[in-house]
Image 1 (tube, rainbow, N blue to C red):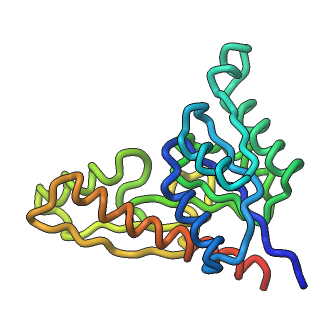
Image 2: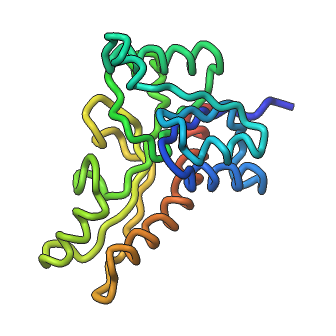
Image 3: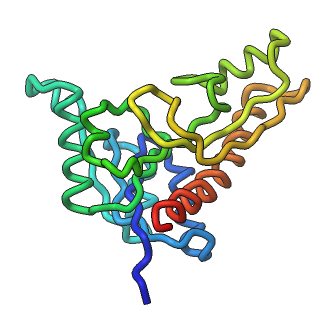
Length: 204
């Protein structure tokens, strides 16, 4: 029997999207294994989620690199090198990883097998605070809905090839928190579906 494809997951926070991946693997909905969870924040709760189910974890501190006189690019190279050389994942998933990766990081993954989850539709709200910006745009009457996408990572932030996208309605009665909760529930579905689709395409 062929071994399952492997995934490295990069996180910065609570890891609810990571948990969606873990749950999908345990239920058989995602046919893969997570071989490492790496974070740029030592206190990220997602590291505990990984440890609870026996997934190896790594922490990389940008501050330590800067304190040592090194750059963000040095940090990216160390992160990429460690993941690629020690774990050799078929897919790298950015699941709420709050750090913009440089071309130097991406050069370690020539198969273009790095995937990001972003809470907006293609070309709509690139970069940070996408949900808040969508909510403000709705309140100004500029949009009727927002969305979520998973896409390939390229140097141009949130502009890589879209693997999967889904619209998310915004309701007149929504608070920002209501919209955040609705988007997060869609994220938990689409990160699993997007990862499986990406892996299927890689193995075709």
